[in-house]
Image 1 (tube, helix red, strand yellow):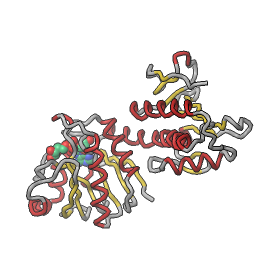
Image 2 (image 1 turned 90 degrees about the vertical axis):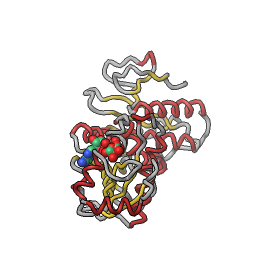
Image 3 (image 1 turned 180 degrees about the horizontal axis):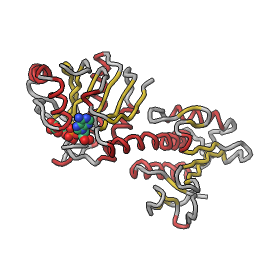
Image 4 (image 1 turned 90 degrees about the horizontal axis):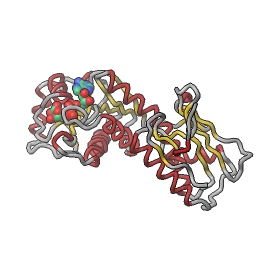
Length: 305
Ligand code: APR
């Protein structure tokens, strides 16, 4: 079981087995995290970089060196795509997290601290850099038990913490999509915002058994959902099983492919916009459809009848 947490602080001060460096292809140090790690870890790290990476390191790849004078035993260096220089392949950024966890796992590391790769000098848009980090770490099978996403500045830390909180809501919607894929098309979702405007809510019902108790979720409950817990690391399968446990009469009827396709489109818009769907709220008018992000003005057509 791997946990993922947001930490505010200096990455060089993390007491994890591995600290991940946001390096460059040359692998001879630099600014930002790279500079901080070489300064705090001392010349041993650079000596190891030269010995182990005589030809540098490819973008998206990862490799380890000693942690030198750092509390961490190892540094796993990875090279993010340089958004500012036109390297916009999200797959390369995903690869940084996946390869770094692979290398850390091979070392036997149990805890890893990541900075937000490519989100500094390499100018990757911060919201997307955060989503890529969380979703890639969540999808990567690894023996690493604790993963930290470390941000030095308050604003980035708050955005990472908020994205982690929101990931419970996104994982719930992904669990619904998983069940639709398995043919449970009578599973319906009605998402909205609490009258206070502070919390996102979702009601999940079995349309074929309206007398069954629906599942109510509010983001005020954080990771508590349907008698279990859902967080960034939960898989769609795990969430689907919680939903099926709470809606015992749900059956795979395969009878509303149009609704399932509509919902898949809604979820895709949610994932692209990094914001949640709203079908009801105080003074909400859904004549133009549902909204992706309360107050965003971005509308998505209402569900088919
Ligand atoms: N601790 C935690 N986070 C930090 C620290 C630190 N000491 N220093 C910077 N950060 C944050 C930045 O604010 C940014 O959000 O880490 C993220 C990554 O920033 P960079 O270090 O600039 O890394 P990146 O954007 O991947 O650019 C890599 O910059 O430093 C050079 O040699 C490096 O050429 C490479 C490029």
